[in-house]
Image (cartoon, rainbow, N blue to C red; front, side, top):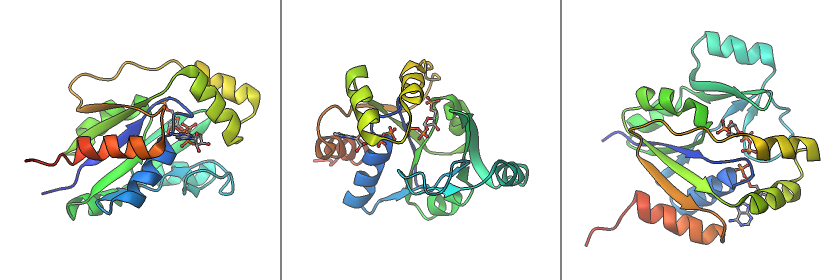
Length: 180
Ligand SMILES: Nc1ncnc2c1ncn2[C@@H]1O[C@H](COP(=O)(O)OP(=O)(O)O)[C@@H](O)[C@H]1O
Ligand SMILES: O=P(O)(O)OC[C@H]1O[C@H](OP(=O)(O)OP(=O)(O)O)[C@H](O)[C@@H]1O
């Protein structure tokens, strides 16, 4: 059977990248999608490919992306190579914008969503500690209004206010339930 394309969504600072990395480290059934972003390659955080705007648009025009979207003044793309991983029956995890979910639903045969949550106070503390954005950029990220999710999605709502270990355990139990 084809693998599932699993979108990890949630507000900035909720822990999408940390949770994805911890999931991939804990279970070989997960493959991480490496995003292409118009952000300097040495910006830190997730393992991504940094490109300039011209190169990003060239790739988009060449249909090199399965999905792409703009956010926070940047462009983000999921390489089309994820299709090969899915065809081999492996599950792919990708950090997606909530704005691209409707497209993703139609693009992938098996599509599920992990919706991570945490309080605004937890988000603010985590963004400040991460140190990738300025205080103004952090405020803008906290104020970004959450879009309603499209109907008909398979969504797993997961709280990431506690430890990463707890979150990983909760997600694995939801995605790979052990049948008695
Ligand atoms: N469960 C957790 N407990 C404590 N800190 C966390 C947890 N999850 C993420 N973090 C920290 O919060 C910050 C934001 O996490 P990150 O994965 O970059 O979030 P996102 O990708 O959603 O913006 C990072 O510094 C990360 O180490
Ligand atoms: O439309 P939204 O659902 O609000 O998401 C917009 C963008 O924000 C996140 O980006 P990024 O990973 O750069 O930021 P983050 O790590 O601070 O979440 C997410 O991955 C999307 O690309």
